[in-house]
Amino acid sequence: MNKEKTVVIGVCGGIAVYKALDVISRLKKKNVNVHVIMTKSATEFVSPLSFQSLSQNMVITDMFAEPKAWEIQHVSLAKKADLMAIIPATANIVGKVANGIADDMLSTTIMATKAPVVFAPAMNTNMYTNSIVQENISKLKGLGYEFIAPESGRLACGDVGDGKLADTESIAEFILSKLNSKKDLNGKKVLVTAGPTISKIDPVRYITNGSSGKMGYAVAEEARDRGAEVTLISGPTNLKPPTGIEFISIQSNSEMYDEVLKRFGNSDIIVKSAAVADYKIKSYSEEKIKKGSGDLILEFTRDNDILKSLGKMKKNQILVGFAAESHNLIENAKGKIKNKNLDYIVANDITDNDAGFAKDTNKVTIIKKDETLIPLEVMDKKKVAGSLFDIVIKDLK
Ligand code: CTP
Image 1 (cartoon, protein in one colour):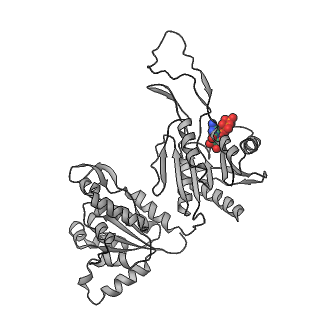
Image 2 (cartoon, protein in one colour):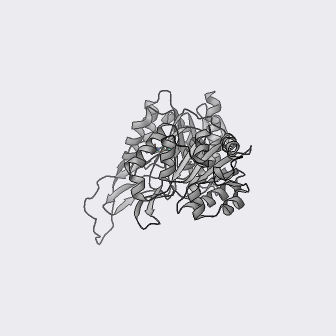
Image 3 (spheres, protein in one colour):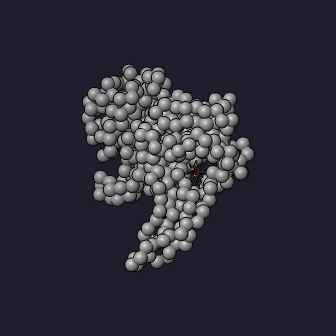
């Protein structure tokens, strides 16, 4: 992050208060200036001193504690903030803000700020699903406030359900992504596919490939960070769906095909990083295949080439394909640009040690429709995604 950014964290009373400390620690590591406002009940759970030590700033706990200073403080922090994040956000603060109530330091600062405000709710599951709380959340979302949805799990009260604070890594990542100043994909709709597809053989067996999904998830996150409205359609992976995007989970080639086609007409940029299977099992066995004494021969039949179909339908969309090759990288990739009517292809040699399926880094050459080659150094997959969008956006201009 270039210029130092300021985030005001509002901490409300709930058992998840201590988790806000971890978010702050993660932000500080990225050189973010953090100020903390705690509600009175938050201070019952964790001492302000912990927040002060981590944020390295005075913690504001109660507007009435410093009658001379609060007016200045709530306005000055509201102005200073590049972003406000409420962690954990209780039903109380959500209700107050949704209904225009400003009766303490935190609610007045939220009301006074022009910075984006993000809520990370955590509460008992019955409270969270209560229609009053849900209505307040919908109202705030409609007004442009953002929410990092809680997870489902075992809550401190023993109940199981929605209401567990989203994990702190995702919260910090979401905040950092919002602070990213390059918003050059604002207003664009970006559709990304990732991961493998699977073809079922029988009720217990299937055939798939080794795609980890890392490249596609990095593309989706980069597009989101640059302001795009992102949909990620993903085959089964071990990755967490990134926050702040529409996430669609699919299994087979035809499910991916249907979901992609539904959104294609409405998308500006489509990045197809998924490793889509070209073949599916010819006849799925409804019953589990029993072993016999001889060999088992499975027959496959061709499945949809999703990208090729998109190439045929393409109007103003920008179409980006990936080519994972083990030989004749550039020639094969160029062939795919023509064959699938693409604007760009990201070609990588899967035999290279720094590139390929489960790696965190990639070494690619981006090839344009006019066959210009842009070879990139080895870099992590998020940076590869960044370079890809830099090139696409430059060409758009
Ligand atoms: N792709 C697709 N549908 C398929 C196969 C591939 O949409 N059935 C897309 C991939 O998402 C990728 C690009 O096409 O963006 C190239 O994929 P790749 O597997 O490298 O190429 P194929 O066209 O399958 O060619 P081959 O397997 O012969 O190399």
